[in-house]
Image (cartoon, rainbow, N blue to C red; front, side):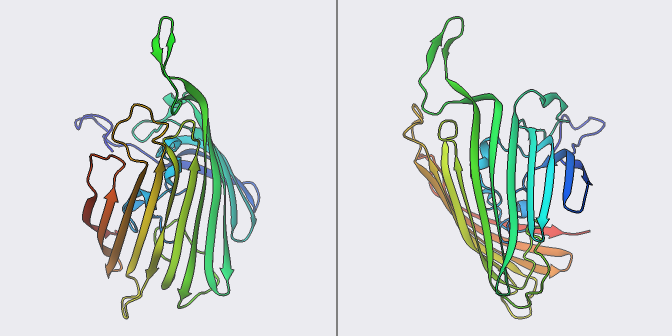
Length: 304
């Protein structure tokens, strides 16, 4: 993304630049600037919107959106206690630094996340789950449903809280695999590793005191190579639902108590370096003044 006018000498930004150092075979530390969309890996619903689903509700957990910046400065630790198990914990600036260096954001609030990702086998069928929490602190969060109070010298002031939280869970499971193998799945690469079909699901709960979103859930089906001779074509179909705290959002007229939507895509592997995706969505927005939107899209990806 451009940071300023087009005539600037360097009209680009860096969203990821980090360093990781293993201190042993099972323990590492990392530091730098990183984006967060890969923090909730799912075999059938990841990909940053560039290779699988396009709707953000199928890319990451919506319960984290209030205080999960896209790109930020931070650091953390990674622990690998056993094969297929990864535990990570990190602290980072809550302010988004997509178009800045991020160094000016220190002191404007911090977020701490810890999560565990593990894979397993049901017979020969690969599966995986991810569970974690987010805690943001040292900043002001508007109190949902709080009444304005009069402060001398300031006038009417909305009450705030200095922290907020969210918990999240994600899972995926193959139902059929042609060649299972024994290698671990790369669930964050935005591509189904096996020729087969499986299910996915996400669930998240947020702090009702500070987050308009009470809880969110999504789930669906995905796969690769279901058409003979089309081994690298992929597909997916999913539904999401978000519960909104309308009873506590005083003064917001025309807001429904839920948002929901459906998406389906089919991605054609034209060549090993070119992929065309056809996509259809039906999305019901939380605004009562907005009709259900039907969105048809296409995406062409090229690898060099």
